[in-house]
Length: 151
Image (tube, rainbow, N blue to C red):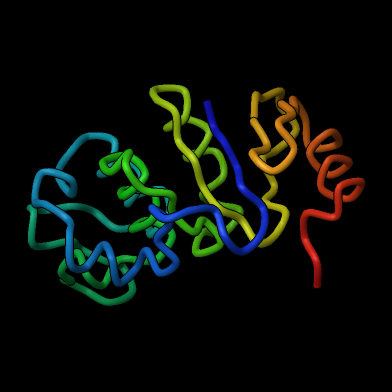
């Protein structure tokens, strides 16, 4: 199940900057897994050639450290269940991948904005309120009613 914390302090195991954390912790097999290959292709439009080389249509051959922050965060969610990652590093194009990953295992993320999880039904547990929501309308209502995002 996907669990979302809205706000600034989700706990001691929180990684604020997943981009930097990824660069210092990723393992080669994280890059070459089938799921990572699909996420990298979908989000960045790039093709994994090997653990240290990705073919980007915009940058040419790049190392994993040059992947987008969104893809890095998704790969961390897939491979590091011990941390809460700042999914505000992800755009809306990562939302469906986050839901897919959360179908396989419990994932807790932190968001500082309302990510668009689409029109389909889902199960998202809001850590701040202890409520599970099943649609974007319910998610929006929960955030607004409980003032989970303050600007």
